[in-house]
Amino acid sequence: MGIVKRFEVNALFFVGLALLSCGAKGARRGLVNNVATVFDVTKHGAIADAQTDCAMTWNAACAATGSVTVLIPPGKYLTGEVYFQGPCTSSITVEMQGTILAQTDLSMFEDNQWFSIENNDGLIIKGGGTFNGQGEKSWQHDACGGKASCNNLLTPSLVFSNVSNSILQDITSVNSKGFHMKINYCHNFTAHNINIIAPGDSPNTDGIHISDSDLITIADSTIGTGDDCISVGEGSTNVAISGITCGPGHGISIGSLGLRQDDADVKGVTVTNCTLTNTTNGARIKTWHGSTPIQASGIVYDNIVMNNVRSPIFIDQNYGSKQKQGSSSVKISDVHFKNIRGTTVTNEAVALYCSATAPCEGIELVDIDLTFIGVTSKIALPYSGACQNVKPTFVGKQNPSPCTL
Ligand SMILES: *[C@@H]1O[C@H](CO)[C@@H](O)[C@H](O)[C@H]1NC(C)=O
Ligand SMILES: *[C@@H]1O[C@H](CO)[C@@H](O)[C@H](O)[C@H]1NC(C)=O
Ligand SMILES: *[C@@H]1O[C@H](CO)[C@@H](O)[C@H](O)[C@H]1NC(C)=O
Ligand SMILES: *[C@@H]1O[C@H](CO)[C@@H](O)[C@H](O)[C@H]1NC(C)=O
Image (cartoon, rainbow, N blue to C red; front, side, top):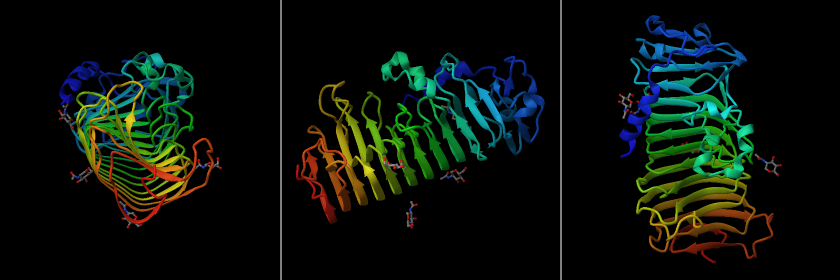
């Protein structure tokens, strides 16, 4: 679905890119025969002066056999769009020790992505380095946010497409222009010990967005950003999220689902052992009005601590109600919110707004203990839980008392 067409189109853009080279673009071709185990980018034209533009690609490493490492030594490197494009002869390890800075001139991101990491099997990216998207300049244009014509203001930092059996670890992403990371059409991909940093008011800077992917693990990471810390989008199956410290940000969300006609089901998402602080939402499932009839099922949020969270537990099937007509047809079922405790700053701590056309089924709340600490005063008390088109089951403690609104 969609995937084949997408790669055919993109393939046109990837012909003839050389290994990482600085200054005169394309001057470094012909390195393909220079087969070595470690490809040190500074020996292939990269200059760590934070100024010279490095068109960072990796065709030589990709063509090499044996155990292949691309080494990015300590230092600061400046780049525009970068393509880590497979399929490669061997699995590649990128040992990233330096800091890579994105160009701030948005016209340099024609494909609307900074690092495009595509068609790779067994790729490992590690090394303690930093991707700095230098997004501060593009955030100022948020007045046109959402419009297609503004899309390249939201250039994501790392886009993984069709990457399988791969690991991303010990990497920092700072101040992305748009999303920090997108994981699309991937299979068996693990990200752990990742640090994601952007201001709470930076627009659309989702931490990690997953879609059309299977067997994805995000673990033991710290994410503070201006939108969802993690969003699990359409077509995601078997996603395990654990040990995440989130905040500031918009929480750990499933969705938004059902915006496009070809959106696919979401099945099997577990969010375990996470702490959210000062976030606008906590555990959230959001689906669009006027959507296609897809399913979101087998979802577990377990052992989550909320500190000063605005909407700790939130099913929102009215997402985009201003833009799209008709209630949501996304069927939400088999969802378990377990052992969720801490503090909330709005009086509607548990809000389950399900669709009239596709009421939620099999929603369970187990041991919920959220203390209202009353920071917002706009919403009328009492402290309570809201339910629409849903008959949840309850086990153990329930604070607030559920379904009172
Ligand atoms: C996905 O990547 C693999 C290499 O890992 C490649 O063989 C395959 O052709 C790619 N699929 C598509 C649809 O491009
Ligand atoms: C997933 O990828 C990792 C890293 O390459 C590998 O060790 C593991 O065996 C893979 N798991 C599955 C189920 O394919
Ligand atoms: C969550 O934490 C518990 C207690 O420390 C641990 O036993 C469990 O393995 C953790 N789960 C995940 C998915 O990390
Ligand atoms: C949360 O907000 C409080 C009050 O504004 C602030 O003191 C604290 O540093 C914030 N913590 C995080 C992790 O954002």
